[in-house]
Length: 128
Image (cartoon, rainbow, N blue to C red; front, side):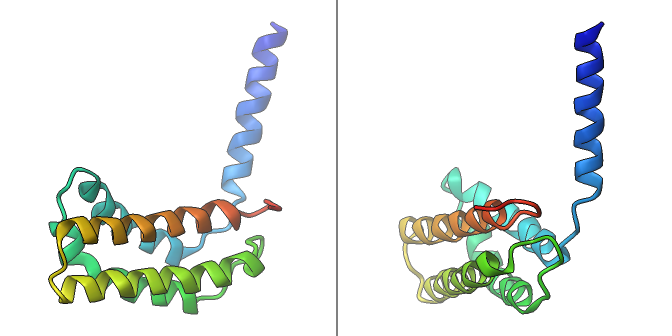
């Protein structure tokens, strides 16, 4: 019985925590495109990278230019957003230069890693 109470308390606390997380629209927008771009690249399908390179850069810039919502760590977010835009520029430039799929995979992977570093380190309520 005590275990059931603890489980219910944890589920309730988690639900409240997620519902109070401020939304960062530009982060969600970027994630939507990065997801459909990067995951095929993991399987050596670089066509989505080629197709989405310009859009990734555009939405990375929009994210960089957006206001950091209250609760997110702007001190960490701003330099990482700058790096993300740089990474996306490199992807777009490589696509335009008809670089090899191996080179594109390396570049989109770097951009993806920067994205994850950004989302993990500037989470609301996180001090890292």
